[in-house]
Image (cartoon, rainbow, N blue to C red; front, side, top):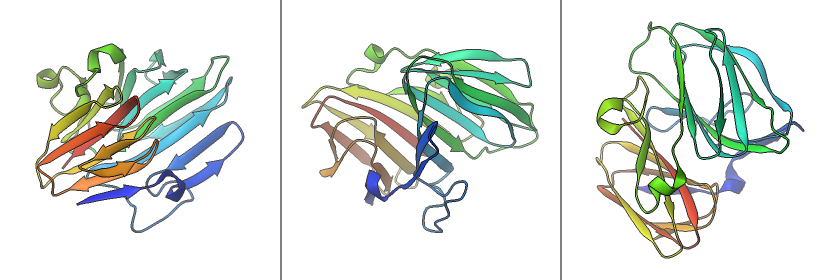
Length: 232
């Protein structure tokens, strides 16, 4: 089963400093048919104006993965962590028993990013934060795991969930395949450009919800960057 969810069908909010689209129910948007996909609970597509951002706020018992596709985001939290995550790179916050953090775009230009929330397999652990560079050239034509519940095996940032977050970049006409467990839930979003997913066409920022498939073939109709979550 492959369900294409066009960008235009996603909940849209424009707060001036923040323009966002919600793939799943979030904040004041509630759709009982879109409460998540497997362990993936939130996928927000954010545009954050220069010199603005999210002031300090708390989280607990959630794995929060931020994939920056342009600009940069600067993180600071109640553990004393502070770091800047630039375009193409990833940060992961395991909220655990509780953490307060802020996310600011301190750049002179707009920052665009995906923020993903994945439900953890275990609660009651200490919170943590980490970031890592993932050069786009190293994922040209193939999937690279960015965050994983088995981080050592996947050479990825750790999350406390039976899930993986992956990315790939393709040139026009190229294809990339992903072998899947039919019982799992995959959610794919093209950052830019158009693709075919097992023959079905999707455009930039559309959501592609997949389950019951043993293999996924993505064909690039334009130069494209892809982000994929595979979860239980």
